[in-house]
Image 1 (cartoon, rainbow, N blue to C red):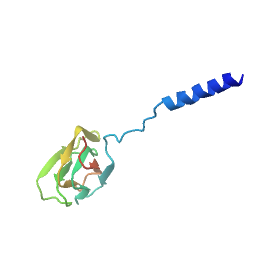
Image 2 (cartoon, helix red, strand yellow):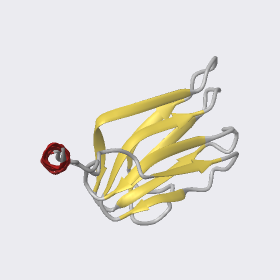
Image 3 (cartoon, rainbow, N blue to C red):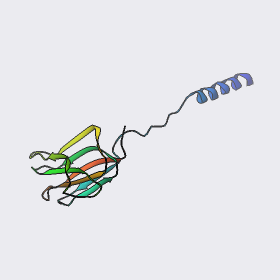
Image 4 (tube, rainbow, N blue to C red):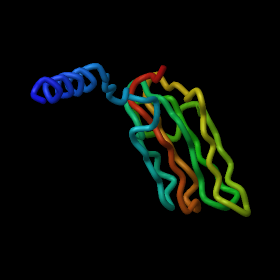
Length: 125
């Protein structure tokens, strides 16, 4: 009886040791979000190399602008531009993500309820 229990115990331990557990890898995806509400003031969403996964905007015919800049500004050249829809909020997702070299500055019209961007620092592969 001891040999049978010992054998079963040995097989159980071997089964546990033979099973490999794998941790989740750091998957690609946004790690940060920035939202602007009722303001034309630019906001720095991410500094340095950044990946942009999505941009969203509330209803209305306003806009949201993304600029490849390491400062929050409304004067450098736009890198991405999204128009709002009159009847529903809008979200654009990017796969692969948009890559910004210097940083991500976002701004929208002062009359926009909200606009936003989801980002990850660094370049996602």
